[in-house]
Image (tube, rainbow, N blue to C red; front, top):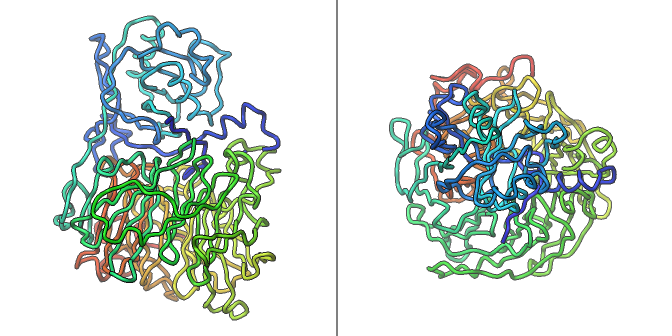
Length: 633
């Protein structure tokens, strides 16, 4: 089945869009899958990209023989040493781009420019058509796609999805020489070289800053399961479940072609139990799931997917992998990006709903509330569609489309029965929404009449992606998925700590800057620590003990495990999410291309090192690693 995904403002519009713009916006996606380099621009933080190996090896003619590092568009086909002659196809924007080379493209590797053709001034392509490019190359008969970025733009892998591999190369004189030779009619043969792969690894303590090939500090590797072991096809979110009868622990992990199940009771010997296949016609890597009353509730940006319900007790006693089927289905007439569940009340909150990446769903891409108190009979409960972002299409196209978008897009949410200091709302059900360009607090006690309590942004907001509230409901720790890559003054990975003691007036408490420049993704607060999946810099664990220190409010990093070996640059590679809530202490972490990691805080990671960031300053790391961002308290 052809895998098709759509344009997503990283991590993932209608009325004013033309048909062409709507089609391209529908399939815009982001997430790079690997990088390597012999070039100084791509060698950062002590990680040599050449070790990653992903790129293009030009084999002939002799004067052009060279290796060119690249990033891959996740969701595109596997790079498996495909070797063929290169054929230039302008921008490769649509199938029409291949008309002039129709007699040569079959079985070849297409080379394209990202915005403007080097040979045809009339051949221009909008920047949000990357996925369409991959599909057009595949439809024309190419076995791979290489894109050369425009001047001033580094390769980021801003697109997904086709069955053929699609990669983007660094723009260098050597790359341009190879492209120009192809344009001039020279026969240029090249090989698409794959990134490194790892076999299953088990029970490796973090010693000397390493656990096998992975950098670490205070976190041990219990097991690593490569994606090939469970029919992986690009992994995404994950969650956990503990069987109340047996105490067994399980991981549920999303992947492009479905959902995988694992028993991890013995985390050094995890057992793959099979998959619930993705039944949608058009597959996308984005899957999200949460657990309530021994059932998993799963949504996806695949089209059409709906919310599937799986009875996790069926996994009891299973020892061999098998193909599973769903126990119940809640119809959505659109895709959905994410799901939150309040296990105290038995309500699910589906967010990021949209039809084909363009039109908002019935809840305008806001909170789609579902009563799941009877898990196998989910029923619609209401919508929150007042405060949210402009949605995928609006942000992608910009201008009037963004300004007048009908969406009230919520990207992620955490919903709780409120027990915090704002006594006006004690016992009320409250959702904290990350909504693209703002953070929103909503009282959803009455599902038919939800009430907006507070709305705020923060300095340099680019994409309010996700947030997690502390156990006392005083602080909300938010991540912004695009601030490290956008046109602002954010350089290091940033965690924004919001003071939500007054639900009607949330405000920035302080900003924590990490010593990394990677993009932050999902973070969860548990037992006084923050567990952050920060893409290329892996899992970062921070202590919240001093979050409200009157003289020096701060977070302190106590441990990390870097799941991505190639680099720590701000690209959409590496870890998507983590689940730190198992009573055993096992931490499950998903690697988008790598597989499943099972980790545990080692003895050195159990308590904060007194020398680490005690005064907001780190040991062997720059001051910004643990400190408050100057001027932002």
